[in-house]
Amino acid sequence: MIQILAEYWRPFLYSDGMRASGLVITLWLLVASIAIGFAAAVPLACARVSKNRWLSTPVRLYTYVFRGTPLYVQLLLLYTGMYSLEFVRTHSLLEAFFRSGMNCAVLAFALNTCAYTTEIFAGAIRAIPHGEVEAARAYGMGTFTMYRRVILPSALRRALPLYSNEVILMLHATTVAFTATVPDILKVARDANSATYQSFESFGIAALMYLAISFALVAAFRRAEKRWLGYLGAGRR
Image 1 (cartoon, rainbow, N blue to C red):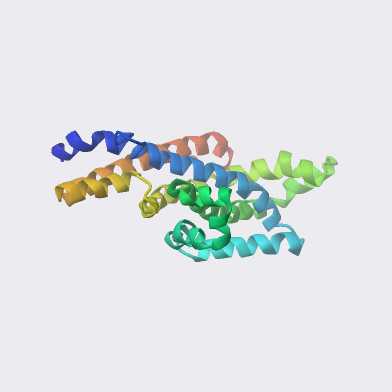
Image 2 (image 1 turned 135 degrees about the vertical axis):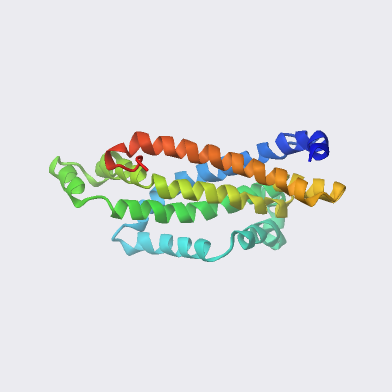
């Protein structure tokens, strides 16, 4: 393991000399996909719980498709499938976008985590006590104001424990990025294994790095739960 660390510590952490790799790429994949997925999931969750079927049905279909198919298949469809389509290859912007493995990986991860996050937030919205909604209406709040000031803040707080699990799962899911030739932690571990044939050491280093990131994320979410869910007793475990 010392030999691999001495030779591959830079690729594992930030760069292989020509491009970013390892930890930097894994964190970028995680942060970018989570940020895009979260931003899209909030309005989609509101549409998901709507009584208007023209709003809720497309969202339900989207979440069903992306939660019902493996992320690995979704990445392959975007990275190799989309580029094989004629209209993609003939459109300069689409061709440039889908030719990049990083773009395809971020898009696949964002769409996947958005589907799960939408259902998490929709469930949290449904779980809001009816009294909070009635109190908001009694104050004369309109639907938009009620969602902005009462429903969404309360739902996002209550969704924290489940959402923290989704973020951890998304971190683990980034390991399929090597399929699109993205040099994340696992890709560096595979390269180290191919060069040294020290499988246990190479993948062991990758496992320890993922474990360290997971512990950091768990600690951050535990702190957030204690701050924002203390009144519900969620932080006392």
